[in-house]
Length: 74
Image 1 (spheres, rainbow, N blue to C red):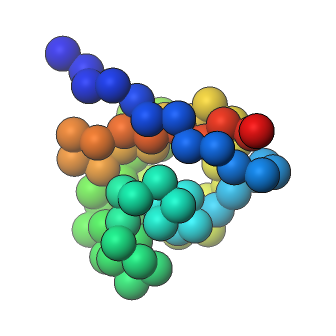
Image 2: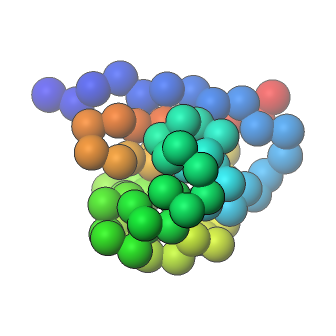
């Protein structure tokens, strides 16, 4: 069963994946975000994403392990 998805407010879209991982708390810092992405541990809408600069829009679901978060403009 899928776990809950945390809504993370962002001021504007798009937001880069690396920034969002830090903002949402899925990564501790930029270096940790890079490590997670390079290791293939990050998915966006269920697909592996290997680009730290990938542009996310409101509603995209980002997952790392069992933790999920989605950017929401507001």
